[in-house]
Image (cartoon, rainbow, N blue to C red; front, top):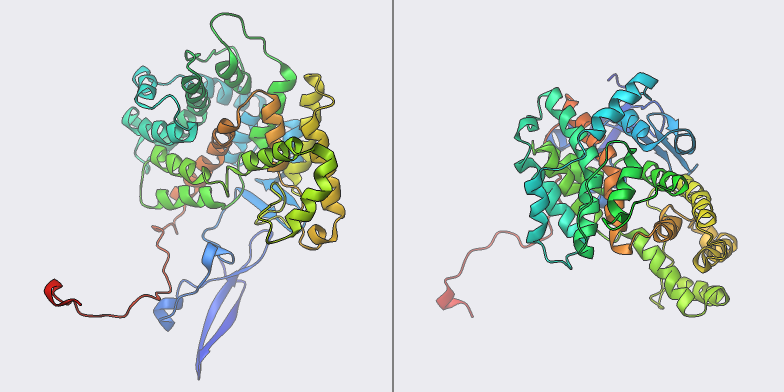
Length: 435
């Protein structure tokens, strides 16, 4: 990578340091601080890494001010309309959309890896029936490395490829098993004559007592949810996967770490929180109470938060939210839920928030979580499973990011530094003399 220019840092009387600058294909330039500590004895201080680029990446680009999301250069709006989820997986992993023959081979390979080891299926019995599905996910995905020893050499490209196929293929099976175990229903095994998302819905909702009928509209809606959540640049869970991977940990352990991070309510649990907010407003009076709710949300002392609005990166309308709104309507129409009270409530809440100066001035636009909860609820997915669905979709991006990191010649084990503010050195007083 060739330097674009330089910036000069003045850090004391007659103390200057030139830092090279680099430009990406699009997006902000960066200046390279790798030599900073060695030459100045100082660190940077950046809580939350708000101004820090931790890596080079070719996978996903976000322009939060313009509301742009690109996977490998392709706008999310086009991918969600013209591609299925496995096409997007191929794109994230390989850098290009597949040709017809490549797509058929990729689909065939994923389909033939959907089953899990039968001993792994019995592992579920070690969890309490009322365990949170995400707790089960962390444990079971982490345990995959105990069953697939033949693909753990992270320096072997063939091993990395087979691990990618196994994770993408087996996550739907594991998510569905977590749901079935929680429900006390028998596991439904995958069928090779169904597509990726249809297979997942069957494993979730079929029962041995009757045949499961695939609804193409609902399958397409869930497939779109998968596409919209497949990757999102260097967010908390992706950074966790990369950080775990930088130590040389196997891919199954790294994805389990990502799932654990995604479990947090400030990250993957946000769609559940947004749906709960809508349900609370509906219980308290519905659309008629929206104005009152907005008033409370603007009062910092009320403790009321407007969930599903605003984003750490997007300072414009989240492009995924527009697609999710369209998908919501398609699903509710297909199910005959034209007068769904939560959708009406969501639309009223969105309208007021987009016109209110308080939210407009703070650029608090709807994000993808605002509508995805309504869609998943309509599909019959319980709120406890929302983050599991998110994990399933994001696994494709996590694997692509992990593989990119492993292949990066500049990759080093992650080791952030700190600004220490604790006690300075002091001597230990024997316990008998401590007052």
